Image 1 (cartoon, helix red, strand yellow):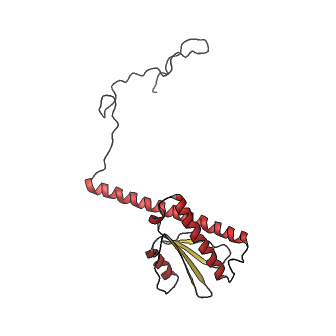
Image 2 (cartoon, one colour; image 1 turned 30 degrees about the vertical axis):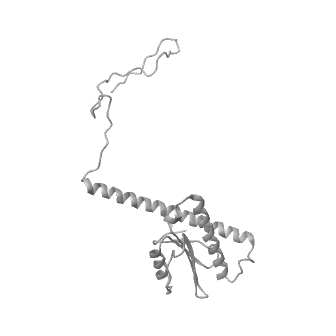
Image 3 (spheres, helix red, strand yellow; image 1 turned 135 degrees about the horizontal axis):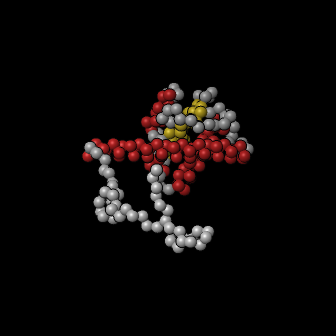
Length: 193
């Protein structure tokens, strides 16, 4: 799984299909343009996730599109959406190589589905982290522009001032301790050399 553009390139193993992952229609259109696909299609018309398959008989491209805002209602819901679209993706890969998805071995289908699910999940995690960083940066930019300075919080000592605590005498940290000769041991004295 790599990201050199605004979308993710998923690995289909040794199968000859390009699999892409994106999160909005604008990026979906970018994928179509980047790969010379000249069709009219839009992404996310009908739900939280879609699998688009385009083939000229020789080459194929499969584009998985997820609406992260709609998927964000819980981890179980997101896991279900990922598994659902990964299943469609695997079936389109088998269609492309001319194999009936029902006749492919169960283990082959299971391993490929697992491989696709892991990549989609990782892509979603990384995309959410990226969006959160962008939101945080945007919020920080708005704060700094609004007041011209950042709010600074200062720790206050027991006299309710930001200055030094006037009680500078150190109290012993250990009380009642004795050394090996059973003599009382006081607190360590700070020395500066």
